[in-house]
Image (cartoon, one colour):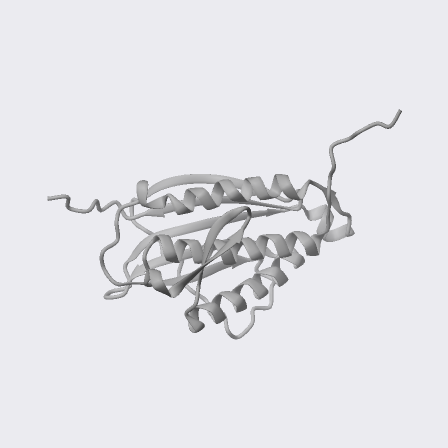
Length: 207
């Protein structure tokens, strides 16, 4: 009699780095769309993670995110990436309005010894879906932003990492006395990503 077991997929360090860096690309697009940084018509609808997702068609932003995810994948594979923060700022004075904080825990044994882990792709996708749904519904729990905005991305890496010239040292772009909302996490069994958004507590005037 044949026995049945729950199917698990082998997750390698490179595969995990690809999953996490791709997630950052889609998450960044979703944040830019849902927080209204670019016109709605500049996004195209695609399907990813079993959900309708929106991707920017602005060539400059597309190139930025593509280069970003490639670099993050390299750092993730090296086990050197600790945190990624997407910062939304006022275009007028660079005041920080929101910080989308993605904290990364890496399984050191995988990096050092090259072992793999097991977790089903479907389970990982379900965890990512939960985060993407929370980003898509962010208008329900974050203040509305009605001024022109810009964004930047901060990467926190190990101190011994040689950083490409395209990246520069930056201040942490913190918010004084922020409000915070913790979102769901996802875990490939090699990289765990915890998500938190902090924001300036200025409610829109409803009058």
